[in-house]
Amino acid sequence: MKLIGQYRNAGFESVADGVMDFFNRREDLQRPGVTFGYDGNEAEPAKVSTDISLVAISRSDPESFALADVIVWAVSAGLEHYLQERSLFLEVCPDQELFVMPIFNLQRYAPGEGFRQWHCDWTISDEATEPMHRVLAWILYSDSVEEAGTEFHWQKHHEVAERGKLVIFPASPSHIHRGQVNNELSKTIATGWINAGSRENFIKRLARS
Image (cartoon, rainbow, N blue to C red; front, side, top):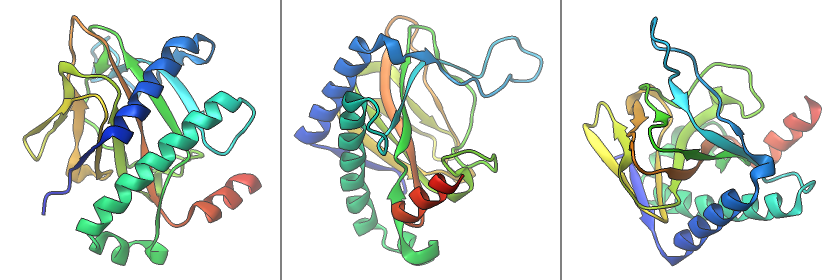
């Protein structure tokens, strides 16, 4: 069965529009995107972007919290559809439960920028988002941009960047991917992960850390 799920409706389009509006206005939250290292001896970073980190469990910035909460709700709705089509995911996950990680990013790639390096979303690094628990990853494209989507290596598949399209796919090396770079237009996405276990238990662990 195909493991890359695509979901579109008016609600996702509305969320995407909210992402664009928020990103354009909140320059105070914008930071250089995390660079995941260099490819061999080349001087060009693997990833170049401008990011905004959102946390759907902190109300310190009410506007940020409101958007983050809406995005988590939207992705959770997409996850429900994904699992209805692929029920074995839950059967093999610890506690037979998955949740949308409430810590995630908005990312803007200016013309010529992108995540050029092949990568997957599962790692063994010690981060607050518990990368070892990641089962799925997600991308919500916030604008429509030709030749700026996502390439999946093993599947020989290109996901087009279309406003309001939510894509859910495995976080493991089975779905190595990279961003397609557009040298003339920018691209904005929201992106994050879906972890094994429950949101409640994750928040308890986070509070103890």
